Image (cartoon, rainbow over all chains, first blue to last red; front, side, top):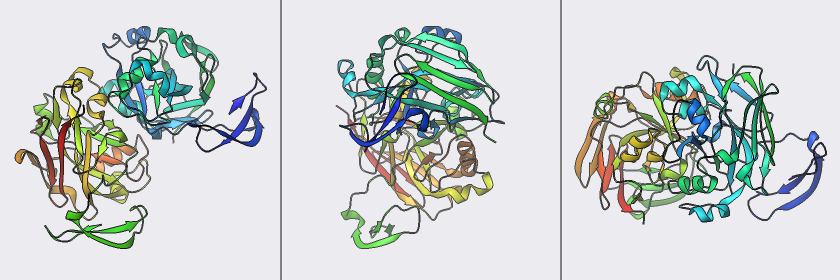
Amino acid sequence: MVEGGPGEEFVSGISGHPFGPIQFTGERHSLSQVRLLAPMLPSKVVAIGKNYAEHAREMGGEVPGEPLMFIKPSTSVIGPQEAVAYPTGLSERVDFEGELAVVIGRLCREVPVERAHEVIFGYTCANDVTARDLQKKDVQFTRAKGFDTFCPLGPWIQTELDPADLGITTTVNGEVRQSSRTSKLMYDIPTLIAHVSAVMTLIPGDVILTGTPEGVGPLQIGDEVSVAIEGIGTLTNRVVSRD
Amino acid sequence: MVEGGPGEEFVSGISGHPFGPIQFTGERHSLSQVRLLAPMLPSKVVAIGKNYAEHAREMGGEVPGEPLMFIKPSTSVIGPQEAVAYPTGLSERVDFEGELAVVIGRLCREVPVERAHEVIFGYTCANDVTARDLQKKDVQFTRAKGFDTFCPLGPWIQTELDPADLGITTTVNGEVRQSSRTSKLMYDIPTLIAHVSAVMTLIPGDVILTGTPEGVGPLQIGDEVSVAIEGIGTLTNRVVSRD
């Protein structure tokens, strides 16, 4: 568990998994002294396409008539400060996509919109890294978005948060590239949970990515990319060549 | 482990997982006395689209210039004799797609074609059940192919088999609907393993579905659908309403 004010955060160890009542181990460290891993090991990451109108437009389309889902495999997940591996030789255009991620806390299926809040464990930042050239070529998103390291998540799970209107900003080497608010989501989080869970059972630790706002653009090897969400924190990753 | 001739098969219990040297528990039962579960718990099922030319044609397209991949979530997997749940109210056209499935036995990535045989644990039958109306509507295959129970696998994993030219037959209520041979795969199994593992790490138990031949068609509630592959066995499932 991470607590404390900016620059003075400290991390308290807990035992077991975090989806039920938690127990502290008594260990405490300054946040600057620890390396955080991805805050969960999802069985699946279900992502939603074109869920901000401005991003749908920049991609040359409209917001779909229903939430459009695709899956990123568990092998694509990395944590904060881990490296995104650029698939040199397979793609020549790899984009960042900053997103709000919802972490599921309960085994559930066919969740009604009005009970969606019961299955949410918390929220974190995500980067839905995408090989844009392969996405266009394949039409199916699976390869373009499924590479190892293409799903940075973190830096932690914020469990006390109203996600309705949070600032979300993506920066590359300190320069702002995406800046929007979660209030602009076309399909809100309860709608997404109802829609996804009508198809597939969700398991504690599974993640729903809620879509990216406008401003997506390319990453280069050596870049440092950060997704910051108000009330959560900042997820930072460096891009390296995978060779 | 399942051994013995037709009608006289027996099942011997093994301890631990089957991906290394196995140990027998000493338990033995007649196959007719046991209920088989799905033969693995995959972290992901990577499926290949339009990999038989005749099926690509019946879908109104051509074989893609590269293998086309998509993912079925682990929550879609069921075993032999388990029920396929028809998502009444969400789809009005649910199709069978009989396929040869490859089971991965080793943690691997970027596997060269010539070493693909080293990472194969064995082969089983699969039914890539598809809500055809949602597949057309969404373009992305994830929802259409991702429903709970839409990935029957089994009846067991055949570890000693040359998969190059096996008869594959799908029957509905005893009537033959698909009948082809794996020699007609456009991209062969080593090519598929190389292609998929160039994108994502494969984990023991992960499954690659190699695509379906021509003859796909609809299932109705109450139907019994079987996928039989020469040298492996027969995977049979019944269709029920999920309500």
